[in-house]
Image (cartoon, rainbow, N blue to C red):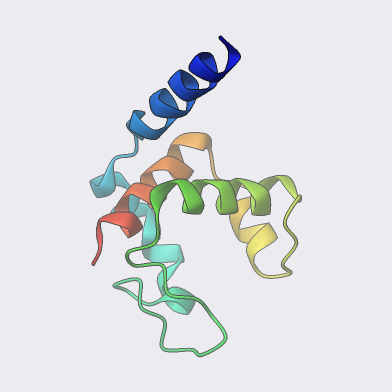
Length: 98
């Protein structure tokens, strides 16, 4: 029984749609462009490309920077003022870029 419930939970989680708005994320991404590039492709070798990253990964990472569980001297203060909706929207935008 536990195996069936576990499989059902995994299936439900993998099909859950993320709710970000890519257009709102694009508008919010202006602050990100200086380091990560206007199109999510960084011209600076030490900064990661964001274009095409998985949406769930970006959400987890940005929330980690915001709450301090993931430490980076540049990203922690950048992510601190972001709301959950801002993070969802940014993640949807960058994930939509290929």
